Image 1: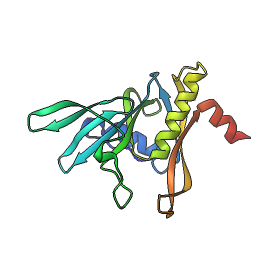
Image 2 (image 1 turned 180 degrees about the vertical axis):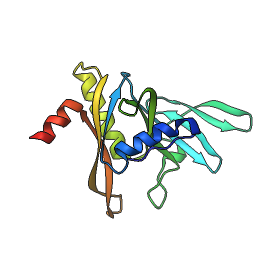
Image 3 (image 1 turned 45 degrees about the vertical axis):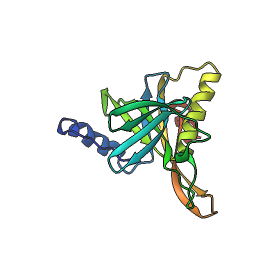
Length: 177
């Protein structure tokens, strides 16, 4: 895991994170919100984000010469969600995962930007299952990286690290067996 900070005052926390987690494949976190994962579709240009739409919405925000304007978003017909010859789309799904790392800092929220679709799906499926079972998402978890072989639409295979999550108690008991 790698952490970054944007301002100098946070450098102490980055140093603490690096001491504990840099190069490791697990991080102990605390979720403090019932909706820790935000998923949206986003299209970027050289100047940054130019259009975005929350995953389950048909309303988008598009950057124009006048500023940000609200537009309707038809996911099935959007030209930017259609794959090109290389199998890529201009508009991609990204997620933001928010949590605390109490061993590093008890009063700062960590935001993890996730672009890997398998990782987004794993976290989203886990949280949806917990909600469907009537469980609160608030609590202590272990986020871990798992190396997996994956294939793209042409059949080319890659070894990628994929995020997954377990309740901290479940992760600890699994590792001791």
